[in-house]
Amino acid sequence: MENQTAERKKVIFSAIQPSGTITLGNYLGALKNWVALQDDFDCIFALADLHTITVRQEPAKFRRNILEAYALLLACGIDVNKSLFFMQSHVHTHAELAWILNCYTQFGELSRMTQFKDKSAKHADNVNAGLFTYPSLMAADILLYNADYVPVGADQKQHLELCRNIAERFNGLYSPTFVVPDGLIPKTGARIMSLQDPTKKMSKSDENTAGFITMLDTPAEIMKKFKRAVTDSEARVYYGENKAGINNLMGIYSCITGKSYDEIEKEFEGRGYGDFKTAVGEAVVKELEPIQARYNELIKDKAYLEKCYSEAAPRAEAIARRTLQKVMKKVGYLPVAH
Ligand code: TRP
Image 1 (spheres, protein in one colour):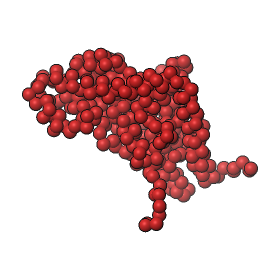
Image 2 (tube, rainbow, N blue to C red):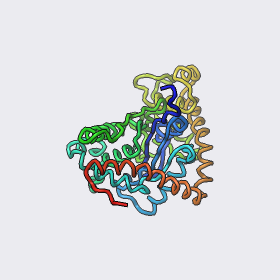
Image 3 (cartoon, rainbow, N blue to C red):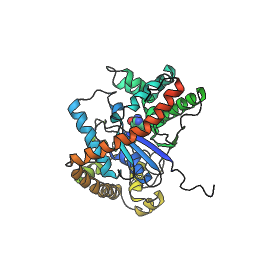
Image 4 (cartoon, rainbow, N blue to C red):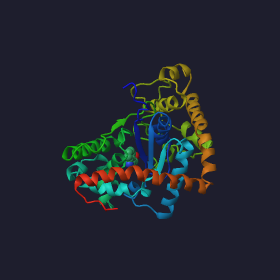
């Protein structure tokens, strides 16, 4: 309507686990996109540190990983003046809503989650209940903030679908309570694959460290990993079938430079893979250099980091509390009288 001023910006929620090294795959597949969304949306980002203990963590290392991940995301361009960026464990509402949602989520639904199946196979000695109910905590994260859109990678799509089902079920049983969120597929980036096995996603848990680039790799390490990247024997740079290695390098190069596949093909016409790998490596080094410089400053400034996440927590809590109160009222709980 004409005279309806300042339409509410759409809300974005996303989170990442502080479970150690953040890779170039995380950056190009998710974080770079989060940074770009900050101007057009009301963005809420979290470090999903409650999710992380579904896999056993060593306390001192876990504590360090959380702080480092927080600093690294700021260094990547998450701007605390534009976005709300907090730690999940600081906002107790997440665990509370997760409990309630657990009671609206079926055993059968959780059993079908492919990530649960994969992770229980991988950590067969610790198939804990948290690993099983991981998706209802994730649903709580999203639903507490009335998120319209959730940028997620392909591996989280099934969890987002379950979140939508839980929200619709609750809304149907009571009355409209939750905003049912849509996934947001990033324009660029998408899936960055391992440099050593380009049919697999780039992952920090790869035993072969040459398969992934971490955000804090030195320029020499980055160049070396790209030079060793697995390709094919055709020696022609184009995007095509049976060219997983080259497709992946083209994806990385395109994501960073903004060039289209056609443009990249032209740029490297008549040139070998050596030249192409060098160019991709150099583009990555150039992209990461300012991030690493900012990270090195930030990680020294513990007081600043502390201030950022400590100011964010109560702001997040205030939003989350309203949703939780609404939910509890609908379920039938009696509020404390003031
Ligand atoms: N499960 C997500 C991952 O490992 C992290 C996550 C937790 C998340 N809560 C979320 C992502 C809510 C999007 C929305 O990648």
